[in-house]
Image (cartoon, rainbow, N blue to C red; front, side, top):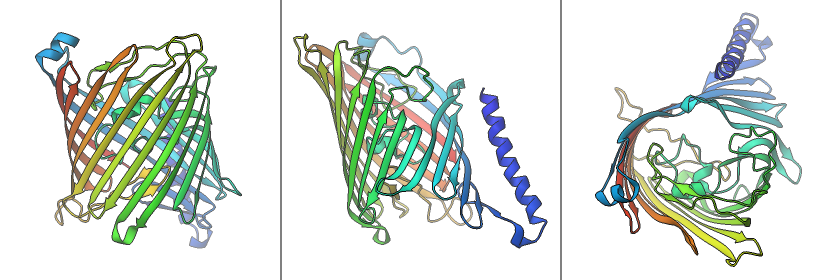
Length: 411
């Protein structure tokens, strides 16, 4: 199956390339398409009715893990103290047809399996509505989760990501207002799993919405203040939920875990977010609280879990974070001077504090705090080297740490 996806993507790419070359042999005015490289392979018709883009990402990770004697006593000694993986290995194609119909198909081959990521068809510019997408999309919830893995500041997302899946299968509606100062998104989803491949998809439903505002938005002065709030109502026919988190290192072991909680009527998750950019400095934080309502016959009314993080970063070479949109979060950073004879690329230093509390009533899932220090070297707009050191404290249990590094290219 993986080979079929790859052959399909390569065939389409070569086909468009061949088409362009054939047309270029005729008079220029008869060539309906142009092909260019713009941090990705792009094809566009002269009337701009049709746009296509092909790209992908490769992320190669290495990590080393450590834990103290208390952690050894509570969780057992580490069986594996180092590891390596292709964290992501994706190809995608997407674009617009007749200006107002959009699509995207993204496939991930990491881990030796094939998974659909973004896979949707949409309509843009619907009067009074905005954009409608149907398929496997990101739920409009949590700024850190909405920002692409190509552009996140640290190698891994925060602990709060584990409260709900990032992608889901359903319908999404979003729009911007007042010159993009205010944005709103809403979606209804089938609880079908992160890759959308669930023929039954009968485990309840999810309703998720989000509103954001730009109190400050001055790209010329590199100034931004983003605030937002999101809410997700989650109902499962199985009436069970589970939250578990590993340290902010994908290869690391999990230390906190609620286990499967039965007889849950529904869950309400609320998230508050803030991001501030001032020249080369940026600050970002979010707080999520989850209320899990028990069945009426249960003696306990509900369980409440929460998680938060705060992070700061600074580009010592003078660059600044780039805001794409409310639904897409932050985007690509281009070094002032690429690595080579003319420059050294861009360097970013960052620190993040994350905390997740999975203790409530008679559920003792544990509380974990991570402090992560990161250094990012942007060789050019599409290549980045990342190094993270993560210190982990599990309350009343012990301490652990990990060192990890990544080489990534995306286009």
